[in-house]
Length: 147
Image (cartoon, rainbow, N blue to C red):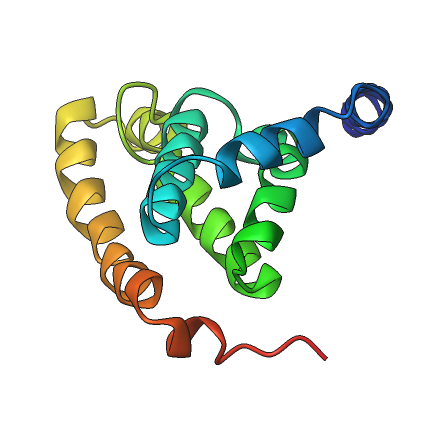
């Protein structure tokens, strides 16, 4: 299973490199007439929605090569972006409509899905406050230095 994922991501990586999709997408995203923080919020919502429908690792492998050049052109710290997408996609697997982690935990504990969802939503919303603060404050983003 892991080898199939690696082989598929290698083929996808070569396809993306040959077609220059990341560069075209980065130029389009940077050219949008919005502030950089708003573009970052849009990218965060893409990762959140994608994480709720697709497995977290598979979606990160699929979307990061497309959004990373745009983030670099917008001037965001790559380390900060990696942490942001990791946490955002992990929150995505907890929120409905698919919520694969909530579904598996409710089935293993033999509890209704609604009660597991009621517990998971407040706990995942706690992780949004530090991210929203670091989105508006560049000093918090540049606190993580890449050597």
